[in-house]
Image (cartoon, rainbow, N blue to C red):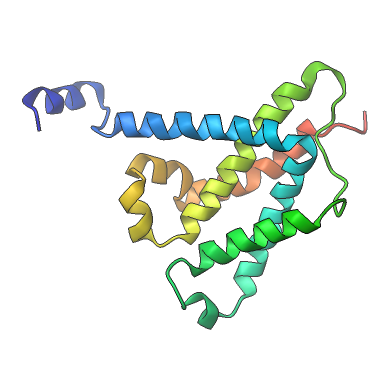
Length: 168
């Protein structure tokens, strides 16, 4: 390590992985926005609900099936999510209201929250040794820690209460 790096870390409090952290968060934000604009307001809410359903299915799958591979939980979760999203044409008639000029901020907020929830779910389903190999500890703290998982799991549902105001 270069002698100036540790000095800067002590002064600023930033870790040596700050560039990796910022890169991940910028990539996350960009992909979230792309997901929101690509899928639109109807499919985004369906994916949110399907993620909760897929996670509920994962919790009742026999452990013998999940022990087949370290990636079994994450793989089954992704397969269930894709399957449920493909078959639910109008299973849930929920969407982000398009009333007024608020559509874009609603879409951006929900796409960030849904992407964050999916990232948190996937990182928590993968083995810790695997996630440590490609995610920094700060990213793991934001997405995969127990408190972060609870927050990412609950906030999108609460956001729907405020964002989906079709009843006005």
